[in-house]
Amino acid sequence: MMNQMKLAIKTVLLTAAAALLLPACSQYEGFREAEQQQQETLSFGAYLNRPATRAGYSGPLTTETLKGGTGFGVMAAYTGLGLYSHSEQRPNFMYNQQVAWDNTAQAWTYSPLKYWPNGLANPYGGETSYERLSIFSYAPWVDVNEDTGLVADGSTDGITGLSGINATGDPIVYFTVPMAMNRQVDLCWGTTDGEQTISGGGSSVTVADGMPLLDLTRMASHSGTVDIRFHHALAKLNVTIDALVDGVPAIDLDGYTRIYIRSVSFTGFTLSGALNLRNTVASTPRWSALVGGSLPTAAVVFNDGRIDGAEGKAVGGANTGEPNLLLNPDIVQVDTYTNPGVTTTRVNLFNSPTVTDPVYVIPTGGDMNVTVVYDVETRDAKLTGHYLSDGATAGHVSHNRVTSGGVFAGMAAGKAYTLNIHVGVTSVKTEARIYDWDSTTENMSL
Image (tube, rainbow, N blue to C red):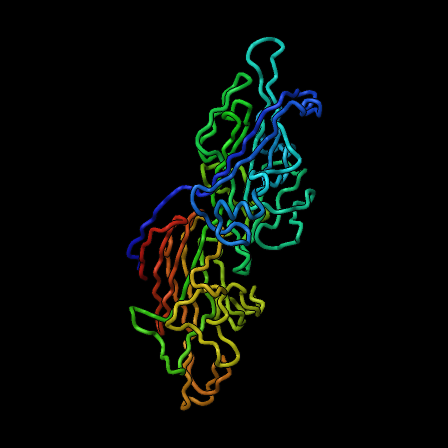
């Protein structure tokens, strides 16, 4: 039963300032080289207002590690005097433009340089009309094939691709949670940093805080700077497991008894999806399934690979007989009586040497329900002829399945979830905590 839950909500972590300096150019003549000699270039600045988490594979993301990594990517659409149309637009001004830190220049740099479209004097009098840009961004930047959008190194996890340069519609980032702890990625996307009112061409556009940077004009540059604020598109999940219930060791430590995990399944998140960089709810990621439609809500199962049906998957089903690579191999059954299984020492449920290493997952907005399937095996020389699954020929094994509902309510991006699973001989107890990428704790027992 769930006792209580405290939830601390904070804002985003990562902010980038993109300075867009404006030229004089014509809607009809485009961006002419002769004019560029008199124009100021578009420059960028990026910083974090407090430490974030991993972006890419280089460890915790701070301003310095962002500078030392791949930087961030920018997509931009030029719409002339018109407004952005999400169904028709292409990234015709910038496509996956990498913005990286130059240590020599001590500045964020990119190539080739781009220039703002300028205002057009109305030949019939009245207010000057301003051409517009819509800017989308994500981090960390990855190299992709422009036509296909697939990542250049062929990776099948992490950021696996972007929408192509000729694709119409909003820019999309395709993402799959890696099955290796050392490849976990903290994906971010950019929005406005505070409300902006954009006037020009006889119209005024107000962009709310946390919404996409749409229809920007020269008058939106704020003395040369357009601020981009990055948000976490993922939730951070850390799950630990031990054999301790109510402070009492749940297993015999003399070597006769073992507890082995067959599977742990979760609802509330999924492992792959498509992130639309034009979010429609302020500061909220806009996820869909990789092939379109809503994110799948089926339980995500981390299993030990056995296919006898007792590990949470039906015989002949999706289980291939191979263990889920993220599941800690020390807590599952092997052919010899060597694995310690679940002991009174708390370990990471996932395959990591550090107990607090998280997995970055895509929240679906649903509640987290947890089902643990496990075996309790006891060797007993008197019980000959009873084969244990580790090859022993004398003893007893009991199969257990325990489900805890509503462990976390409405999982959301930008939050860190910690779940401690205490497995006993006949029961499971959990301690659940939610952080907002910082630290506020809360306990819940089931």
